[in-house]
Image (cartoon, rainbow, N blue to C red; front, side, top):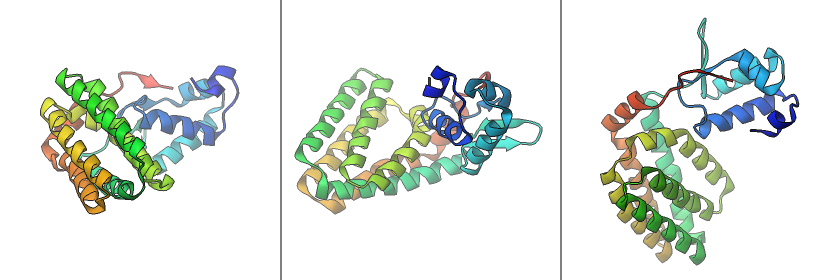
Length: 230
């Protein structure tokens, strides 16, 4: 619940955009969710005009799809879009790993290794949620360790957009193989080997992008809303 919702205060269209964008990127509004204007107006204690403005901006940002006579829904990505986004994410995270080889502290590397141990424990127990949480924290540490706020922000934003699809295609073999790759990435960072760190991270993310058949299946099985959201 946001501050506006708690206090009953009116939200501006810019604030509505920020809140809905955060809901979409963090999976609280999954692909296919219908955005009902009146329900949103009630939620934010505003007229439908700022809600329409917010939806137009979200549509311009490619997060929402608006169809004549059907209204607005959270956009469901095509297989080609998912693959393309994973390829871009691979380049961003590869660059982050390269910069980490110059800038990441020993303490941060050890923290990332602790995340990988948590990944290993989750994988051994077939704990998908635990694995994904530890894996996300490991990648976030590497993004922060690059000491580039712009890079970290863009990689995190794209990673959140793809999180639902990553969850849908995660399976036991993939969890197990990720552990060794994580260690190679962290070893290269620890050794200050920029090229090896970048190459290993890029290949790690590329594996997901290259699994086109799995991504198509994930798109077909991705959860969609059964009700209107506001």
